[in-house]
Length: 168
Image (cartoon, rainbow, N blue to C red):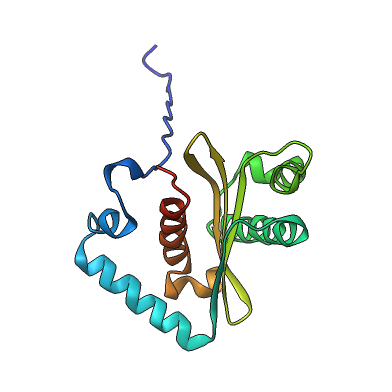
């Protein structure tokens, strides 16, 4: 068929293999020095805006509120980038993520983390820990803090936390 078009989409998740380094500092050395320097500069600029608080492994209502904010931030990002997402278009996704992040009767290994700058959530990570691995399922950043690379700063700290928790 000469006139038919076949579209094939292969999606592969980005990952970081933590087993290649014994410590976060060793792992961090794989990044170019300019990138590490920029990350430190972005953190200083973000701290100039007000206190920066990174909270890992949230539970209960705090986790639920963070998950809701993260989903809202992701939907805002999708709308501003004019992207469609079947998962985020379906409101059942909200219920699933809330249940998974806050369940006490059926533990899911949920890891909910946020970076807050001057009282404003700058980034949310929802991940799942299982058998010594951490899968970051949803990462959402506040576009108002985009110039500070709040998402990148937070992800680096989540990787640091994974090393501290013995996740490889």
